[in-house]
Length: 318
Image 1 (cartoon, rainbow, N blue to C red):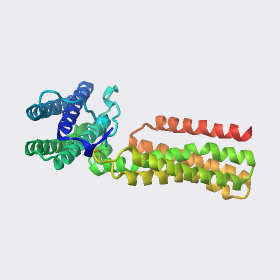
Image 2 (image 1 turned 180 degrees about the vertical axis):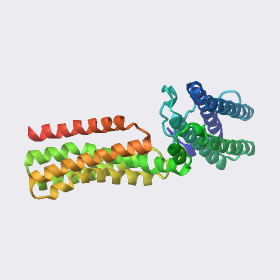
Image 3 (image 1 turned 90 degrees about the horizontal axis):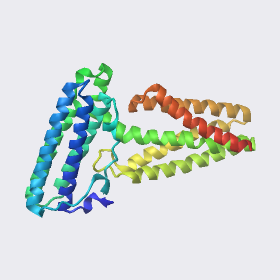
Image 4 (image 1 turned 120 degrees about the vertical axis):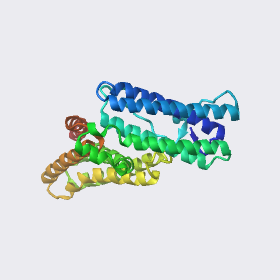
């Protein structure tokens, strides 16, 4: 995997062609999936697909003029800085809210790519085309934010019109939620295994503290090194890493603190209640910011928590 800064002008253009082709096909799938229920939005995606096709033709013409007929294969997954896209376009039925957010995210990412590529390009004609495309992608971004607003519920429409909300989710909520889920769930087994094995609150507290700190450091580094955020708008990698690491530690320490209570049984019951509160908070966050249905979020979070908790109980009781 290459860093963006290592790409030559030839590779930048080849990557741009690949991105436009992918976006064109995604918009075509969005249009097809929405046509029955949202014909107006489907028509808008058809127009955006045609514009992406026009971008690709302009890039192809300039590439052939500058570098010849052969276009090297270079894709988004070959360059560090891009985030893997969920295959939302394959889901049926398509949800208009999810499609709208995904289209906006795609346009932000592509615009940032063109802006960054233009800033480091020396060739005048290439820089001019990249600047022009960045401007056009900005208009796409604005159109994506306006997609079929009349078909959205009033509360969703009011919230999602704010671009800052999307950035907040990308830069704060996602890494924080990943950390909170990992810390709250993964540390259940060692904490409760130690508690049941030793029957001592202080021993369980020390195990929980060590597990929470270790998980926080590990998750923080994993998040910081996963994506540099330069092309995706996800923010500085180390800021996301700190957020993820802190939330991981908080998730583990939450059900560890009750073991400071001297009475073991009281501490054990208090820790169990804290676990329920943590899982409830995770479920609420997934519903509030990730648009996950309440039942689905509760089942997913609850199932993971129960399995890890049972693992800890079985190990501690053996």
